[in-house]
Image 1 (spheres, helix red, strand yellow):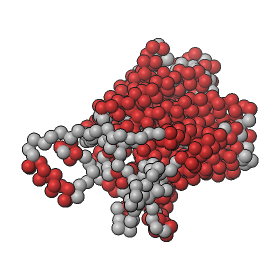
Image 2 (cartoon, helix red, strand yellow):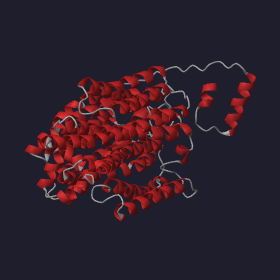
Image 3 (spheres, helix red, strand yellow):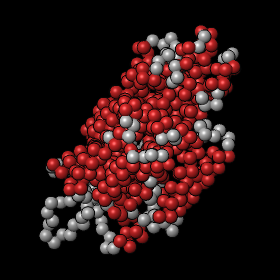
Image 4 (spheres, helix red, strand yellow):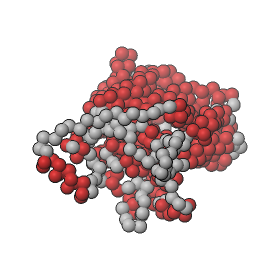
Length: 562
């Protein structure tokens, strides 16, 4: 009972009185022993897991295969002026729709929203592959993003419906392994297809999503509480709240994506959408807490619970730093080590390869021992130490150093990648699983966006601040105002005169040092915040209204099915 009272889930007054009376009568309570429930995980269970892995693979492939092929695609459809939109409309659409998907899956169940999301994802890719103009491709990527956003939320949620909280990180580890395989092969495959037939960059996703649909339609049969009429279902949807949220997040993401690329950060084109977006976001949360909102898509309890609040922040930091590393670690190799973009991709393999197996191991440890705070401490401490060590790298650093530093970094990512969502869910009532998962996925994606934006601001500011170290005026012009990142991948640094090369190296080294020091500080802050998390019991009991359909219905007991 003592452990149960630590749970952040709110108790009604009757339960509180009963608990207090029980403790008064039994001053030395008997420890609660949780028994692993006997669960039947037959063929249908594993087919559902397989379909989830397939859509994880294809969404990860879609996100990474386009990175190397996009320059070729934009040239083919004459979309150079729309490059930023072509690269980011998927992120905009998928991020904005996540809380809406989480809420509606509580009303309509998981099955149909998931099938619709996979269909949208497939239609978007089919249209993208058939695109004849940049406008058509942008619209297609929006459709793909709507489907992808739904898949991200619902795939996590279906795991929650089928697996008790203590085992969820283990199954999330399986899925993240599959997705990472796609992440690794995506850029290579994208480069190859971009040179031969760029349309297959999109068409290649269709077989995987098609097989997933072929499995889902007959086997993804999940229960849910059904309303008697469609009118009552629609009345539960938070249309106003989601409209405010989507408009606000699009405005915020517009500012973050366009800032420093199409417009300077001081431009009204950036300031206005950011101010309007964050103001609208505040209005959204006011609406969620008001009596006008009958069924919130992002309930206030998510932010009134210390463990869930801390874990959402840890999610934001972990995902932001992951993107931070992915985008800026190769810059060290391309500038100070004179590596080509391809070679720099090989140089970051110590991090890319090892953090995924470590995430799977983390999931197994959480499942076996039911502990998560030590994992979070190790994860953020390793990330902070590794980023601090990366800040001391220079052009003369030996291979053993940067390999070892990346291995420490992989420990950080492996410990935090999949270990946070189950804790958020454990800190809340089971009825909040859908909205909590939708919010978690939104925060994760939002962290990815900031993981590009914040280090870019730091990097470009330091470059501009120290450009006076470079005596060659022509080179200074090629590096200022955000151009240094792209310049790093051209290989032009190796062609510079020795004296100018040393000066340029100094500018890049200074910018990277500051960038990694800030990352180390952010990870250290996350480490401290882990102390605020409560020690909750990660239950082995599965209590949900959304599990798999029973094959037989007991006589006299109605079962609501989808």
